[in-house]
Image 1 (cartoon, rainbow, N blue to C red):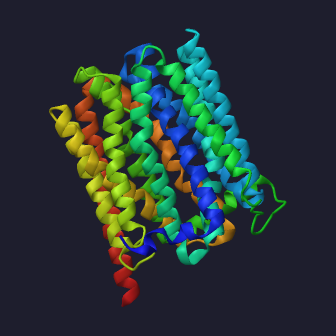
Image 2 (spheres, one colour):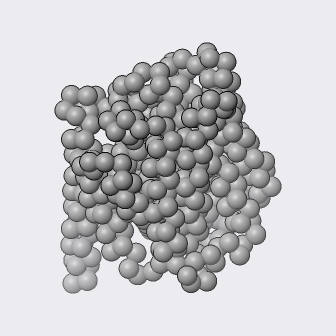
Image 3 (cartoon, helix red, strand yellow):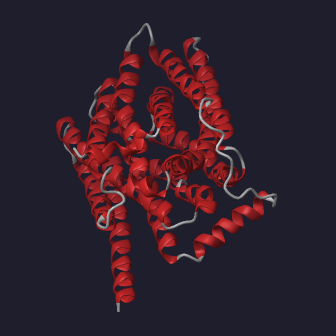
Length: 405
C-alpha cells in the first residue's frame, strides 16, 4: 500500500476529525441496522421497513439543502456539534423506550425523521470540512479516508448491533444505548476542532442561497450530470440494504445476527476498495474508475436479488461493498474538485439528496416488493442503477471527445 494512501492523516486537525467520524459512523451504522430490525419486529412487513426509511428520507430531503446553506454560512464545528449531539439524544430516547417495553412504531417513525433531519444538516458540513482541513491538493485522499472510516465502522457496527440485539440481556434497546454513547464521544471530539468559519459568509435569505446553489449546478453540465446520476443510483440501487432484514429473516429464515454479518461483509469490501482508491482519487483515471464501480454496483445488486442462499448472498455483498463505496467516494471527490469552495456546502447538499431519495424510494419499493416479490424488486433496482451509470458514461465520453476536437 502506498504511503500516499494516508497522506491526509499527517495533518493533526484532520486526524482528529477522522477519529470523530469513526465514532459518529459507529453510532449511525448501528442505528441504521437497529431501525430495520425494530421495524421488522413491530410490523413483520416489507412496507413497514420501507416507511421507516421513508421517514428518514423525508427528514434528509427537507434539511439537507438547509444544511448545505448553513455549511457555507456558519462555523462548521458548531453545526457538527449540534447535529451529532441531537443524534445521540434521539438514540438514547429510542433505547430507553425499547428497554422499558414501550417502543411503538410511531416512535420509530418520529426518531427516524429527526435523525434524517440531523444527518441532512451535518452531512454537507462534514464533507466540506475535509477540504478545508487538508486543502485542494489532497481533497480526493481526504474524502477517501473519511469514507474509509465509515466503511471500517460498517465492518463492526452492524455485526455488533445484530449480536447485541439478539442477546436477551441487552436487546435492541441496549444496542441503541451503545450507539448513543458512540455518538456522544464523536460530539466531544468535534468540540476540539477549529471553528472553521465560512469561506464567503452571506447575509442573504437562506432560500435565496438554496436557489443560488441550484443555479450554480445548472450552469455546470458535468456537475449536473454527475449529481443526477448519483441520485438515481443511490436512491434506487443502495436500497438493497433496506431490505436485508426481509430477505435474510423473512425469506431465508435466519436470525438478526445473520443480517449484521451480511452488512459486515459489504463493509469489508468497502474498506478494501477505499484503500485501493485513496491514492488514486486525485489521479487522471478516476473518471473511468468511477464508471466501472457504478456498473459493477448495478450488476451486483441484480446478483444479490438472485442469490439462492445465504453463502452466495454473502459473497455478492462483498463485491457490492467494493463497487458501491468506490462509486460514492469517487462521485463525492469529483463533485468537490469541479466546484468552487464557496459552493461546496450547497453542492454536497445536492449530492446527499441521493440518500434522501434512498429513504423516500424505500416505501414504494417496499410496496412493490409485496406486489411482485422481493427478489424481482431487487433485480429491477440493480438494472435501473446499471442503466443510469451506463448513460452517464456514454454522455461523459461524448462530451470529452467533443472538447478534444
